[in-house]
Image 1: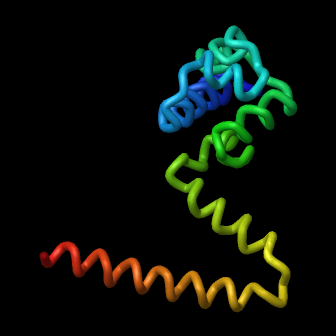
Image 2 (image 1 turned 60 degrees about the horizontal axis):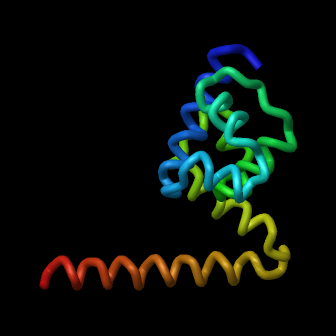
Image 3 (image 1 turned 90 degrees about the vertical axis):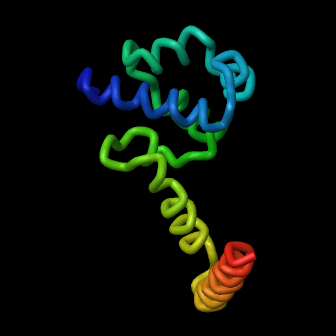
Length: 118
C-alpha cells in the first residue's frame, strides 16, 4: 500500500475507534491485535495484513471497504450497512424489507416533525 494510503487508513481507523469511544488498549483487547500494531497503523507506519484489518473492522463495526478505501467516508458506512443487509436478505424477501424500511422512515420522519413542533 502506498504511504498516502497507509496514512489515510490510519486516520480513518483512529476516527472509527474514537467514534466507538475505545482506547487503543480496549480495541486491542477486543480485536486481539497488539496495542503497538494499532498505534503503528494509526500513525500510518504499518501495512496491516488482511487478518488484522478484518479483526479491527469487525470490532469497529465497519466494512473492510470503508476502512481501506480512501474514497469511502465513515459517514458512508450506514449506506454500506444497508446494502449489506439488503444483499444478505433472501431475494424473495427484499421487497418486504424495502417496504418495511420505507414505512419505518416515514414513521420516524413524522415523529421527528411532531417533536420539533412541540
